[in-house]
Image 1: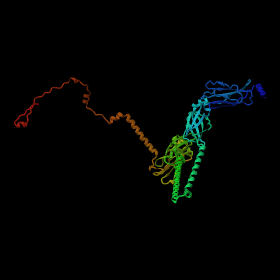
Image 2: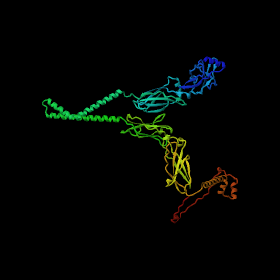
Image 3: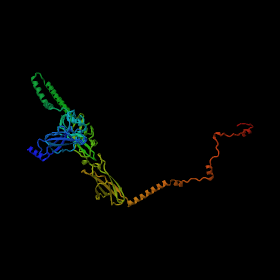
Image 4: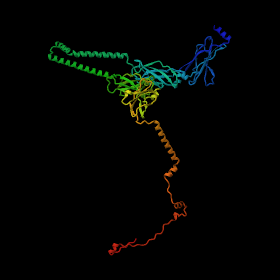
Length: 586
């Protein structure tokens, strides 16, 4: 039948049907081309595959090993698509004898973004209170080549006993440690890859291991047997204490009858000794029981109670109550868990509150808080809170309101509350305000302006010299409205002055100041001469000062003039009276 159809096609000059369903799949950089033969394609038809590399002058190149494919076979394009950053195309056509089909061309394919990232080979082992993850990429050259493209690993850790799990985003390393786990507990780990580029990843199969050697069933049986023996001994000794005096009396009477020469004094002496021994044994048993009981109670640490995660203005605060019967010195460790990672935040704190906002949260993430108690070497199980999504579950605080009043109007200035993450308009695309105002003392007659997007609202038709109070509430896509702002009150003025009058007066004052400044600069010299005129000198003094000098006396030829002096005699009047004469020379 096929030969008849082939001969008919050859006679009619009709080509073969083109291949269909051409697709390129890639897993860990191993690329495979698959296709289906066209309808009515003869079984003897063979298929040839060619690839196109844009950097090679757009020439189609045959693929080695894919020049004579049978129907249903695939073509490995890994070697042909060797550069992960480039884009490629592939095409297929069928041929038989002298008859060929049209080429069927695939879509553009880029290895780096279109491949599916499979996880590397991972082994898990315990290390006390942690798990050691070891990755082996030496067996696959494609994985070794892709290590540089891996941005991080998504590690999901699940506790086998109750299904509690958390996820971590870790940068790729050959050896990784997942810490803060319970010792002696089995955990299962799945790993998936993330790259710098948009690629699909597949998670690995769960790999399970105990953090440390678990307690075997034989150990549990031995412990139960010891506890049972101890309880039997306690019951026997209690019975001995209760019936001790009666048994001792009976035993001593028997001994008295058997041993000759026993006196009543010896009988009573032995009886008292037996009673004292019974009391001593009972006290010893009670002491041992108290010590063992206290040891067992102190070794166990109860879990924290009433764990709650709250959000106010986009923050995340974890609160809890101390464990029941908690002793002094209990410390707490908290962690923040989201859909993609888990981060330890507070370590060994004594308070019952931890701010998880410092863990670089997102307003659109979904988070739960975890806390455990520790006393010495013992620690409790992790206790988690309910999940909180900040943008829909947070409580938005009240806005800040400022009032500017005139005679019959009042401007309301609204400032959004500060958020721990971004701003209010940065988180919510639509923010509206509900403004409520009333005359002081008449809140029952309050008026409202609802759903306005303006943060500056003007209230009209107010009474002059009247005190008004205003409150504002914010609404977003968060189902909870914000807290109502505190009432802010302001009085309108008593003068009804039109705003344009103040504007005109201000304009003319400013214009006059500018004109005066310009005139002062232009006529600076005239103004200075007018305000500070110069003094007029006499004409002869001006001529004398302006005349050039006629002679110059050299300073170096100057000599002081000769001084003329005479000898002088001074006669004292008192000396002349006394008859004596005194002369002095000067």
